[in-house]
Image (cartoon, rainbow, N blue to C red; front, side, top):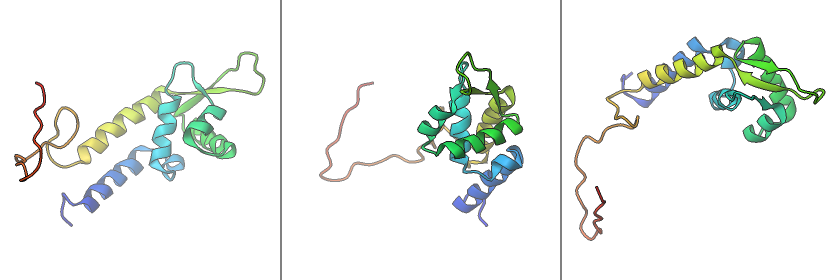
Length: 139
């Protein structure tokens, strides 16, 4: 398999994912896992109802995912201030480290040099096509 092929890149990123994320969480959709951690990454925390709304998930699914993340020590439950059963959750240092390390590992799995924006560098000049309007951008 070609090292730079899309399949090889996908498999390298998938291997990094399973190496870094706890097994109970790794089987979930990576987009949901990362968004879940990012949404919890607020000092005041976030409620499960707000998580369900932002992730567009049913409340029972968010509760189950929250338990898995607490068990994996990626988030912590904050004590409620007179609201009864309502609780807030927040990303722990372990969860923040996971987000940072995962970002670095997945970027490293991508081939080629990257620009400062993280996008691939243009390798050749783009020539205008006949009949195409040319725009001058301010510098």
